[in-house]
Length: 72
Image 1 (tube, rainbow, N blue to C red):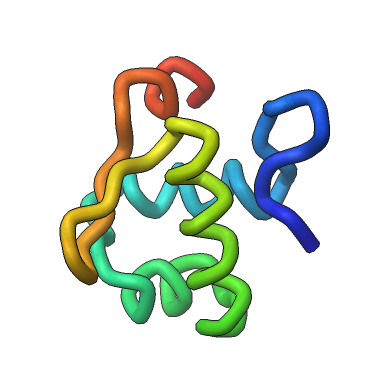
Image 2: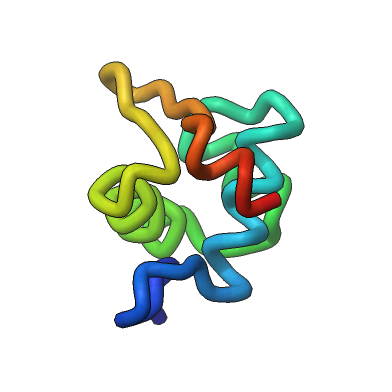
């Protein structure tokens, strides 16, 4: 299940991950624990969010962008 729909808006799963980023969770493992989603889905979802410009990646650490924060 993608985290960003064809319209460029985050899905329910994407919103949950953006919320975890806003709460200060920066690693895929922490985001998986916070959202209750499997790690493999979180990793692919984070790729979707980064490609959509809603999150940024620095190695294995992720952050919410201004665009991602505006959606929340």
